[in-house]
Image (cartoon, rainbow, N blue to C red; front, side, top):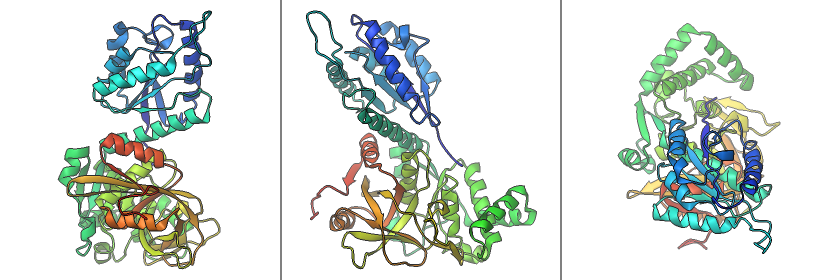
Length: 458
């Protein structure tokens, strides 16, 4: 399965004249905690080999720290304050990088007294962030809180997820498989602007090329094909045209890997039936479970939305792109998230039968909490709509679907109607609204919170 890791530079800092013993106690405590958080995803680069006790307090160590972090190609920087810290050191190091920055220090246990000097950690954080602004650097911070606290854990994880999204977008290459269907003007976007603004590249891959590769795979039927076909048939035992579908999936995967693409925008129903005799909508769900999601109808912004959500949850669970189709017949705050059959099989509700009809899946998704978003643009401006909801019950339908209940559907609907968004929304299980807000801030794009009242919202 496709996954990305994150390399995090951690630079603890202290004020030179304050207690090293106390600073080391703080440093040992928070380093122990962060080394346990998402350890399979996050590689930590420390400064233990450069500074006494792995804590910087003088400018003479700055160049060595910068050199080490650059040689390790860090994706983000974390500056934990062991006490008041050194804003000059922090800002100088941070200014040498174009990566997300996290500021935090553990909450002081007591104020200064005649007998003992405290750490004044929060005071140093205020000073440092002022200097970072003078350098015109974007940064994140966690409230001045104890190391062993839920607040620190949530703040640190939010930053890690934010950094993962930003890294993913910086290197994103989207396989553009075919052209948009003629009637779908709503999915149009400016691909040149995506390169200029975000460094996101689209790579054209012809459906004909995919079909030729798929036919070759069917002729050879090598070990990889046989293994995948067995796996596919176990999931969809009554499916038709499964051989063509399996071959198309493997062909798409091969061509995306050859072109260094991790997501794609896919022309399905308007291209493949004539070329291969099947509409391979199920392939989109299969590729999502492979960590390489595809959007329908050659929706480039939809593919970017999926890339954002994939990194939000650190590649731990599949995401899906759904059409907004109808309101719930009885529940005023619920909406149907539906499509003809491209959702990931891994998200299927337990105990529900999965059918395959004309290359399209039919099953209901599992229950749980959802984060829903849409990256989109209009007139050269970029926006990210985001909200959190929960699944709910509703009447069955064909295709793949789940009913979503919001806090105020009329507000959501108005924002989507008046905003620059189409009806394709990216969805992932979990709570990632704070991550998406941070991502929007770092990218310099408009953030549209579904839960906040807008210009038109009720």
